[in-house]
Length: 138
Image (tube, rainbow, N blue to C red; front, side):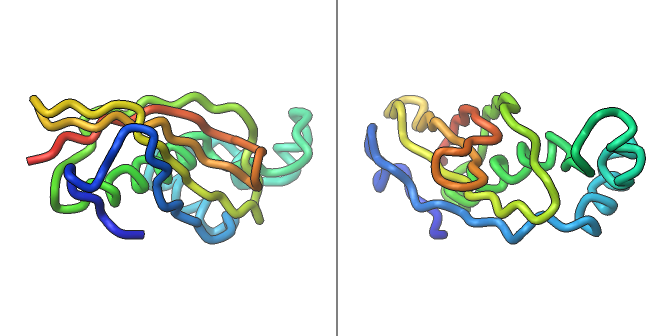
C-alpha cells in the first residue's frame, strides 16, 4: 500500500486496501502485554467459553490499531492522522484475516485535511470495525 499525497486524493475516491495477516494467538498475547488488557477472554479458550463466547476473541482495540496503521500509512511522510474514531461491530477471532478499507469523504484546502470513512472487514460485507479518520497534510 502506497502513501498518498494530499494532491492525489479526491472526494469519493476508494483507497487501496491493507490486508493484515491472520490474527494469531501469539499476537493476542503480545497485544495483551502491550496494552495492559490481560482479560483472559483474549488468550484462554476455557475462560472465553465460561463467559458464553465461542472461543478466544481479539481485543477490539487491535482492530482499531489496524485502522490507525492503515490511516497512518495512507498519510505516510506527507502528513499525519489527526483524528481517529471507531465503533466495534463484530468480534474478531484467531484465524481471521482483516482487510482495512477507506474512502475519501471530504477534502479541505485550508488546513489541508482529508476525511476518510474507514472500516475493517473479515470478508467482503462482514465489517467488524467501522470508523472515521482525518489526515492532516504538511
